[in-house]
Length: 605
Image 1 (cartoon, helix red, strand yellow):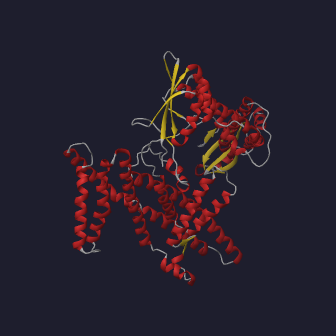
Image 2: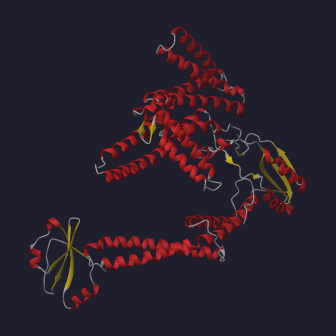
Image 3: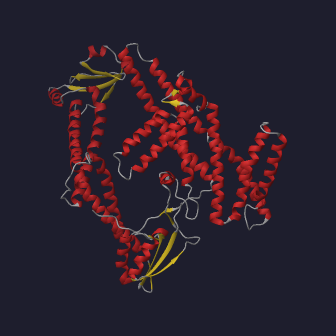
């Protein structure tokens, strides 16, 4: 859910403003209203410095080899560390560019092999000229070797590379391309490349040796800078009145933290006003969900935070997303791997990483459940196995492909319907019940008219009963859809708008539900591909006992690793698509909320 916000407006004398802000930053509960004032030149310099530190910190973090070792913090200052790192980075980048140039040079020189430029110069002093030629292999003429002092150097990629030692009076007229003599041999190029690679290894060793000592200094400096930037940004967002004698500052405080700021203000004796949010206010959003739903907040944030005032639908899409992930991956063995991996990871993970691992564990659990429903374990089709102890499970729990497809469509229909109820709730919360009347008309039609029409059409229920139900619900649902879709507007505008909504719903609803077939398609493709690798492992392995086991193991490891990676990627992305497109659309999700970011001070250790 979205935590209620309270607006605070402060009126402060300019002499008291700086001390007040310092204490307010220490309190860390007020999200200051952003007036979108551009930072001044000094603040811009601070921001640029912070960004530079952020990049260097991000660069050094992966270089720390052993985080368990006690490492002394560097005695160097921030500027000295940055200077060393930036110089090392520049030298490293320059070395990489030189290696790329040498590789290019080597590709052109390699056909000529190793030679001595000094020897070529000495031959030239004796009155001979060494000329370099390239010709297509099919155009090379054997008589050239007898007519001239010719030596073939190499034959590469259908071309012959050769040299001719020419006397002063000798004329050479052959159908071959003459090229410029290489300035150095391939051996010299490789030697230069090796020297540069040695220097690059020295730079890498410098990073590895010093990263753990440098980082604390840089992190501390960045925290100090960020606190200063935050302070100056708030100063810039304050309004000055009465010839800059009085300063007005506005911000938002979550309801649970109101008591903290009230206690603070009573101690400071600062004049302030409080008010509730009004339409048009740009209100920050802070979510508060239970332990389960909170795990899925990062997934919802990939799209957008809800707008303040609308319903937070994170708790409502969370169970569906978990189930859809398991449906798409659809292999109980892969699910067990995920569960095992996340459990091991939880033993070593940081506090910040643990929620993601718990989420992974739940997704793995859903995969195991859906894998057992679909009857797949590491590509083994459990429904087809002759094992007697699986008989009860096969008869009562495993669904065939037709049933799995119907289950996918049923889940899609259920989520779309659920989204429509949420849209009605959203409209009631934001605008009042009158604006939800039309939505309830659609719920009635989708929930009763369409299903009973289909069941009547295919003789699944008695025609006289089914026809009455779908016709009555169609008429009752159509009235609010056509006449009450825009409260306060005239009846003709409502009717026209209702007809247009009907067209959009009729063209979109079927497509929305059919989109959920992808759950079945991805699940069965993962199962089939796993089964294919199992078959290949058995069919392609030789008869030799030891070698057979090795080949089977290699094929299974490669095949299932590839299938697992592709299936997990698809299982993450496609439920996202179903959530953000089909579900969010039918739930009337607007989004666009700004995250609550209190004016606070980072800890400087």
